[in-house]
Amino acid sequence: MVLERTGANGGKRLFPRLLFLSALSATPWLLIFCLHFSVFDSAPPVSSPHHSLVAVVSDGVEDAQRFLLEQEEQLRRLPSSRDVTSTADDCEGRYVYIHDLPPRFNDDILRNCRKWYQWIDMCVYLRNGGLGEKVDNSDGAFADEGWYATDHFGLDVIFHSRVKQYDCLTDDSSRAAAVFVPFYAGFDVVQHLWGSNASVKDAASLELVDWLTRRPEWRAMGGRDHFVLSGRTAWDHQRQTDTDSEWGNKFLRLPAVQNMTVLFVEKTPWTEHDFAVPYPTYFHPAKDAEIFQWQQRMRRMKREWLFTFAGGTRPGDPNSIRHHLVRQCGASTFCNLIQCRKGEKKCLIPSTFMRVFQGTRFCLQPPGDTYTRRSAFDAMLAGCVPVFFHPASAYTQYKWHLPDDHDTYSVFIAEEDIRSGNVSIEETLRKIPNDVAEKMTETVISLVPRLLYADPRSKLETVKDAVDLTVEAVIERVKKLRKEMHGAGAVSST
Image (tube, rainbow, N blue to C red; front, top):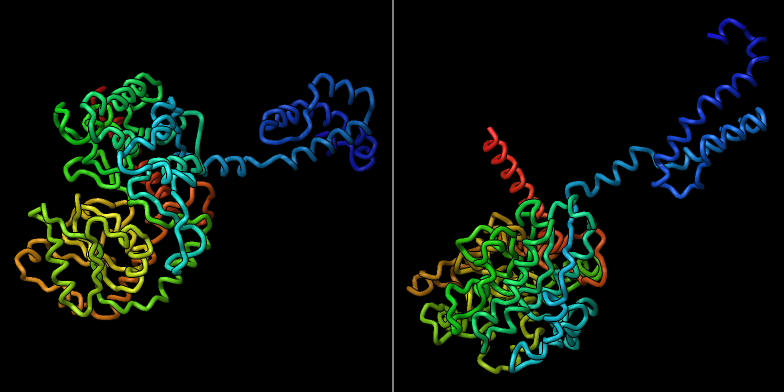
């Protein structure tokens, strides 16, 4: 209003005074704004409003102009509210909190690795961050980097180390979408499987539950936002009685544990709170490029064999179909049989299997001691299409990591048909058109990143591995449980 009344000349005469008054009126707001955002920037601290006001009054208009220019420069360097929001939103709803467990639940267990088994020192498999020793690649079955002699039940340390690399970790459990419990359940149970009484087998599990349920993090959702992993099968953790001679511990049957999401390399068929994650293979890439190069190499492989069976029979198991597979494979000129008898040295060498899988179109994957096999993942890593004989060998297990459309990446032949002799494996596989088989091979190769565990000592840039997918799936499950709990609370309150 003043500028309109004074006109052009008056505006020129009044400009220094107006600038001065503007500085006085704007300074407190600018200071408040800068102080509010000072936590986001390393700009020099802003002096107090009283000190700034005295400086402006005493030094006149020139100082006021200089002050305003300095404030403008500081504001320009501050991140905009849009930038701050987008950075925070990247992890909103995805934060993971990791419990800092007492060492008796993890590190102390590892120190006992020489005594887990009476016949082998397992400490060698804990080297290189739990990956084991580097494999011998003298015959060229592997790549030069990223391949290790990993134990098929050695996931406890690998998974924990990979979760510690997760992009959205938080020290504030109230912000967490999920809470990870780094209890080495698989390593704990294995050290007591032989020669221990029931109370010894269960001791660490009971102590863990006691520790967890006393924590404020547990009370937030009664443990329903917690997840824990065992690198062994669920069968090792569901002892039904307190008989000393019965196998395993009762970790999975503890009520508190049943509130958590529990991860195994093989789940039980009838429970809903445990989930299967892939067995660890020999491949643990440190860089995205190592994965892409391996996939390209598998695409170029000449698959001269139609199918392969690598494994041993189960003479003491009347339900096993393995001897049928050995017979059919041995009688076919299209099958490469790698029969593993007890103590056979070639079956202890990783390259024995990997080289055969790389040259084969279909790999037979029957149940072994349990429904699942590590061999299925080794074969898929080599681009070999798995042939399953029981739904629990893959289809009801790895729902977070394998496609729902089973026909796109695998072949299914029912165990009953093999036992009865009604089905020829060779004829079944030869009926699959070449273009369909090649497409299945490509699908399997495309799944490779989802099935491997990256080297926990490094970090992939663009590729999601089995741990990434597992954490995402756990968070989604917790979100659903949280909604169900809130819905139940709303109903009960009305």
